[in-house]
Image 1: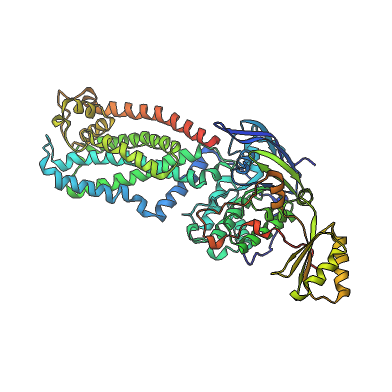
Image 2: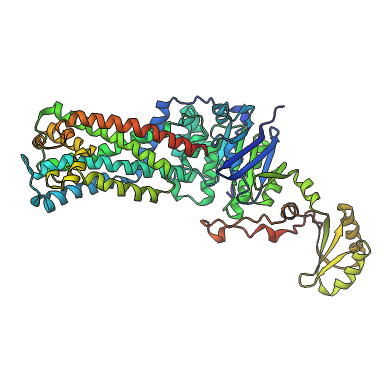
Length: 282
Length: 339
């Protein structure tokens, strides 16, 4: 500040033309900004890359031998489960990112501009979806290396990826809700991981639920994570359809996955927007 | 001319806390309003309401003639905001920060590029333009924050404690920039805990305490309220103290002698008394180091109005070495010093 130069005046009489962007344009600007963060800090991707690869290797080679699955190798059984887990964990990332922006006043800065306020949330949800998609690509590549394959053709294969993204989009709104409610990144992290572990482990992701106690098995089989995992397994040909005694959702996994995704989005998106608005009023 | 900013009976409650409790003021276009008050007085909440970040519990405000409740988008187009914490994106470079905000204003790309060069040149950030903002010093962040706020050349600028946590040099640099903006016609509304800052920059000061306005006026008016001025004389030789005190008593009944600093303080009515006392010393042959008129500082004003001092708490996250000593220690700042 020692050498403040007096150059061309920025007098208000020479105001530039302001044309407030549409929701779409504002959101994509925020996506650009969030992706720039990932590029600057590639370690932000650790959770969906190194960490997920580690999960794959740990389960495939450490626990895998002790877990018996029907109709497929454990590695093939495992991959869809880990991909769904990656999508669920990304909701913690979106929550932490949003809380951090709120804490640091970046959201205030955006709110002081003539920009649709929902752009912050829409931008955040899209960039998070891109974030978790990167994770899915890394998972798929790792899977291909250790013997996972898409066996039922391109169309079914793509449908499974689409289901993953739909489910990911739904849980992102859970993340935005939690991120808008909580005050610190640490609180969000603690809460989300406490929630994410049972949600992704009490399911058919890593082991068949048949071996669980009856009450836990019921929970696991009704867990939305299980339906999406089962749907991916069937669409990719990574395992047999659910056994006749499995709960109803696992008998119709594709339909149930779509239903869960729509339902969760319908519940959490309005909650998230309301919580964000409420927080934004003060 | 319509006022640039207007607060009309603004009220904000957080639960049972009345953060702002019926505040009204008017800021004429092109002037500087200082919102002065201690931590927790409600200054930030006031600014957040006027800049549409926070919705008032009751009352309203107008910015550039637009109602903050009914026309928030128009308000946002008409003003810039520099928040309490420098709200720049640390992961982005300085230039990217401006690009981001430019895109969100929908400003032409070419304008943003040119304005960025101009602002960075003016704020001495050109060399750091392509570095991530997290590598910036506190002062640089504030300047970047201000550059971001000025990108769309707003006619009205809100600054929430713009110099808190800055070292004295950065602070006076920022003051210089703010004065330039005022010279160019920008209306400023700034909050501060620093009485010196309000004294320095503001045309009008509104003193806020516990959510209410407790005084308003020009810095001079406020200081007049707190008591009279005094003439402060510093002698070259301590041996002259007795003679000097005698001379001064002839003009002012109450003379305070401070032996260690060779300083004499006498009650004075104003500049007239000071020149008379100066003339007396001139003919007496007593050598002086300094002679000046000390007016009560805004801190004295605050003490007078509220019964407690307005000393800012030292922000926990700043380097103690980088912040100034508490304002209370500079209570007797001589104003018109004669050689």
